[in-house]
Length: 284
Image (spheres, rainbow, N blue to C red):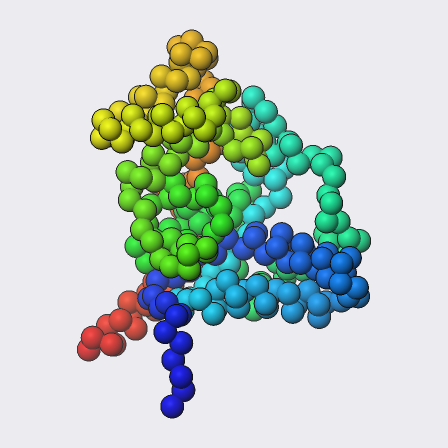
């Protein structure tokens, strides 16, 4: 009979995949092949690189109930761009020299979305990023596939791309992760965090939380206090709120969010229905 690859993990959960990753890793690999290895640019080349990555990252690593690829809207259209006051959201990327540019790069980035959209279940909304979409849709029937450490603030099942295994994040740990991020900021997205709050301050803060075994209320109070000490009571809360809204991924606690992104919630619910029907057949 056929040999079974025991290294492939199986799950009956739905894979929610942060597909923005492929726009970056694929175009970087294509650039390398053209510039350093002398290949000619072609659609076939891009197709081969996409296939190589998704097989290596996903299909040769785990079997999921289904695979859903989520993409981001353009930065200027996402809600965080209107929230950011202290610094322009992702403003550090404007006018930055692209050391891995090649003439067809932006065309390829658009094509990568089309490639997934033709072959797989693909989700995209015109005003949110992929990590918000993943965060909104995560539940007990799904798991997150992402290289983005920011998504450790989302509880539930995750896939570790480096260790190639599933792991769980509790609600308490997820909330702490969000608080850590509010303090340290996110340089890649131009989110400043608390000025002067470096790695040393962060590890002291983590130690205090651990030693005192703080509740979520204690964690949020302690975090806010850092901002109040730095800016005074009123501005401190304002700056904390701005950082909170910039760092916090969307959660489906409002009905209007479920209505606004109804097509994605509907897609997930259909796959969950199929899944529970399949499970019932197995147990019948």
